[in-house]
Length: 250
Image (cartoon, rainbow, N blue to C red; front, side, top):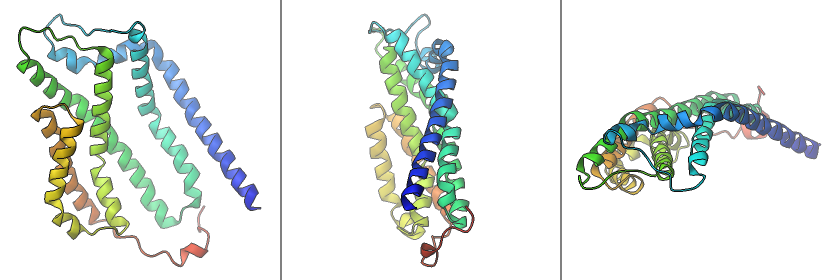
């Protein structure tokens, strides 16, 4: 009986993963004809900072084809992320208790929204500020022509850094919810967190003070947001009575 249940769970997991992959593939195929336009849109912050008439370069033979495809894959991943998370939620939800469902679902939705907001903040504000700053201080004797693949790698790194940075409130809430730390302990650790935030910003961003500040300052502010949100999320109560009984609502 246990083996049959395990196999049925594996089959359900396979089916849900397959659905997510199919939806991703369909969206990707729909985006591929517009992959060049998607890359142009992604490159808008850089192109607006370069002198008029400047263009990016491609040093690889098939780079002009592969890089836009990678951009289309990135966009398809973001667009299908809600459906993928829904499939993951549908798989684990039957095994959760009622109070766990009421906590996990808002957590998943909030973390997804914060990650997307972090990417949007990076694209709409950080890139414009950083690229204009870098090109203003660049020597006038050089011609700036970024490689399209290097630019994509830089953009993906920055998107990931800011997306994860905006997850700071979720991390704070989870730590207090699990009872690993208290709000008072986190407040006392605030000076150390500020130092850590600037160290992380120095590591993952370009070596200029503007981009470092644009990552470290939001991280510190989001830490404070997490402290406020943690007040409304009580620590998890001991579940000794639930550990021997199945969930009431599957």
